[in-house]
Length: 308
Length: 181
Image 1 (tube, each protein chain N blue to C red):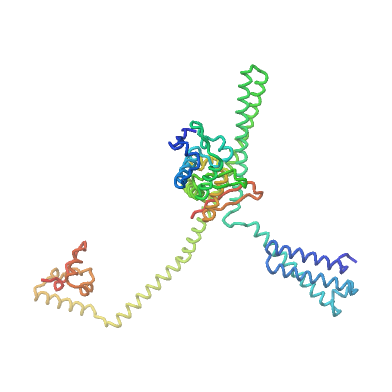
Image 2 (tube, rainbow over the protein chains, first blue to last red; image 1 turned 120 degrees about the vertical axis):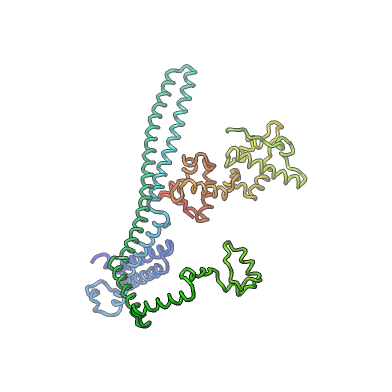
């Protein structure tokens, strides 16, 4: 018999799981479902212990559910527990994911930049520290020379030299860091530019698709057809004159104009006023005149609107 | 410091250093002290004062010429007045460290945001250390700002939704991302 086939051990295990689920649900915000699953697990565990007290043991019959009574309950509980396990795992996965993505406006690149900049800041602090050590060694050396302690002054100068070498190294590292940071920043910006361009080209493509040659041709054909049928309709409605009749009409017009002594040029009419005539009708005549004066380009009003 | 701070004439007036029995006179005196402290700190770019130490040694509170010193009680009255007006803030429970706001956090916040906008740092990630000590802030008022005041000002911007403050996973470095608003 395997250990988990002993019912009371299994019952305790389930109760343990239920408590764990309960803690996850309440402390980390798994919600009402988490609590529910915890309760179910707990009941499941209790049931196993009850079965143990009743003297039941794990047998092959359990698996084909042939017996009735507590066995079926246990099967149901088992099924429920399995389902719950899946859901709980899902909830926990969600929780972990939530914890990772704190703020949608902070991208991974931002995080990486902050990390790099943090390292660089540390180097800068280190640089300051070395700088002050160099200054200190310089001071000590100067003081020792004054005291005529040549050997110790030399030692101090050696120290200074050592620090100076370290300083160059640190400065190099800072330089590298800066390069890396600006590299990440540039890459990030490039990505944004790329995305924007991609969007633009996509919409261009979409528009192009709508405006395909075939579609345009179809459209042009359709409108040509429409114009033609329209022409036909108006011809049919108007009843057409043939060329001879048209000429006769023109001749008659000419002769009438000749009789009246009017030429084509004299027939030219003054241009149509661009102002709304209704304005003049609605307002008093005086007001209308004032309006006229305010206009930049006053149009000659109709004769009857101007007072004598 | 490039230029010595020129104290106002009342600084050499002995009653300025002691509490006045007349209430009105005293409140004027307290106000003058507030102005003096703010001006002095602005001139020397002092962001935090150690109350005990500065009361004992700082020329701001010790006028050797007329051998007068500001007493602790009188100083507390002035500091309390400044704190109530938002010109100072106690930080540390023992009441010994005082943040001096010759610019209030909200003013620092505006200054910082405008600086970030004008120097093209919107949408970029900056560390607090960088704003405070880095090359990018040299020549601006922000350079050398007290980290505590910097953080307070950043929190003001965060409340306004103009920046996001975040930290690395280990929490070692805190950074700020200025957003376009």
